[in-house]
Length: 81
Image: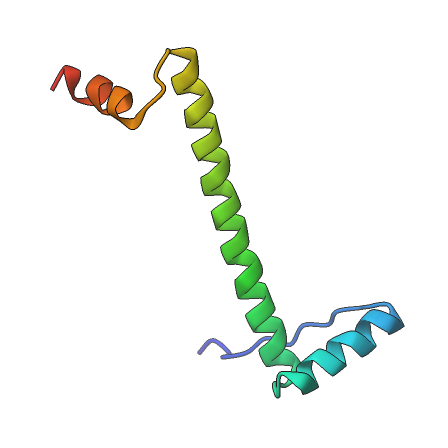
């Protein structure tokens, strides 16, 4: 059976460790809870960044093809269907 939790050791500079402890206390969470929440937030932010990067890439490619509006894109997508 797989363990439900895996211990993880993290090393922080003293000042950052104090700030982390204070934040956990202020949020009324233990350090593990706070770390899990922070990690999930970081993961979500990365997913959003990837989405926006793809969106910017698509916008650049569309501009290269002279498409400036969503209607232009839709017309191209549905043209041959």
